[in-house]
Image 1 (cartoon, rainbow, N blue to C red):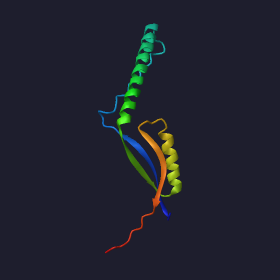
Image 2 (image 1 turned 60 degrees about the horizontal axis):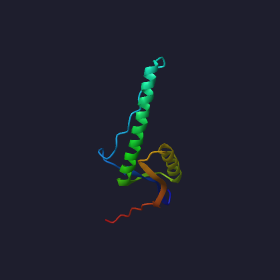
Image 3 (image 1 turned 120 degrees about the vertical axis):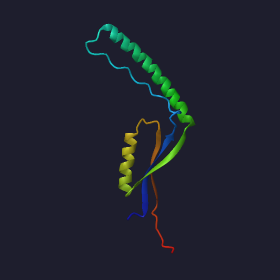
Image 4 (image 1 turned 45 degrees about the horizontal axis):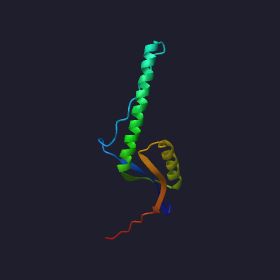
Length: 116
């Protein structure tokens, strides 16, 4: 048994549904054999989507500035498992703006004492 308890720890933005801006949906691509008019409409829709995406990013920035951040801990069986989990969490959450500060943490192992 390890002399320490190990875990991964990170922060998650605590945003209610009304604080979270709606992410825009990209326009569907036209069929391969679509006419020029459909292609032009797609280009126009894509430009509108890019504008909506910029607005979404700005709204998300604003929401995250006001967000409460919750600390989350995921216990591991040992240091090696905690380090593997940390690497996986960092990789999976790369670019995720709703999670941040992924770290490895440890604490003295709990020792239970009979008191009665």
